Image (cartoon, each protein chain N blue to C red):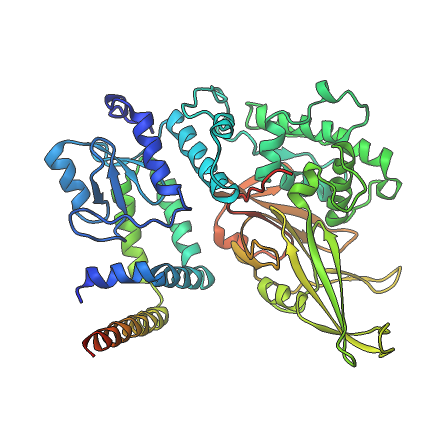
Length: 99
Length: 441
């Protein structure tokens, strides 16, 4: 399955929404989200005329660099197991179809 | 930050309204993928000129602009308008009004069911043209409060009322004014005047002196007389009750006054006899949640609050003496007020203060037993107390226009989110992140 197909299926099954919420909760709890918001505010305070693109690039860089690695690992595992369950179901349905 | 390109689009209001409806009908769950690369999570944007959907965080949105010179798009996650020529999000007063009207209308339809043509006509006008406060000061609503002798316990509560989104909108809309009320010694009129002064005065350096509210309080409640420091939470309960009386509240358990609509919730208390297992359930009203500090996180304290505990209780069915009691939230109010019980009265002369730090989240989700099973809250006010009960000082952290401020009597300081979250909180005020509508009775 292509990445696009996988993403679409994740959306349809509601898993994308669920995984996003898990990720968001974790990022809030560990204080990463607070750091990012405070950083964004400080960038705007330093330069009131800053454009969205500039702000976005700076934040994206800081966000990727400060993303907690332990959370990265656990999210990837979670995503992997969700997709495997999906393909298992798809495989099962395919087998059923063939019989 | 309006952009000159907005005026170049014909029928902008209608096209924008349609895009907003697409986002919020069915509660913002629709996923709109980019027409060029198929991505869903690269922030889809819909062109206001031709409805083409591109992505903002990758190249397709910009690509469409370069091909067609269509400058304006709507961010399909939050309905804000982005201009590729200005390379920034742009804002227009009338469109902002449309945006929030559409959001409210769709949320209302989702909760209440589809609107009949008659009801839809009563809804906020599609093309909002009323003038807002054109000359409003940029910090209207953010004003210091004069300490008139250990009255900081009042100031922090009044600031929490001033920045309560529902109450603020209610009073600023003229719901209760002294010219209409005509009662003398009305607390609601005094609070309304406070809103007018704090939100209307243009001078940033001016502050508010709560003299009327203070004298009303002394006249009505003998317990709170005198200049000694009082408990902020006690004042909150007193103020809410007084407002409830002055705003048409009744003594019934299902009082429908505005104060109860905003602060009132209900809780189930179930007692289960350990011997014969019979359950006895009562429903109690509540205007706030008072938590014992049993854990180091707010979520932990709340869990402990709804956990079963052993009690002594004579069962009417089997005369057994042991039971468990469990509390459960049934209906949660739009504003959630939480008190962390830091002051313990050991005896009439000895009261101690628990200074243990309890962490609290900016967003809180609570489960209820009613049909609305989960309520999402956002923090907007944190009241802190420093010192002892008799000689301490209150300050409050307030969220104003997406920025946290520390309000210490007449001194207002911008603070980081991090600083707020590290504060030793005494009272916490949360508000529903999305207003929930009910069919009128």
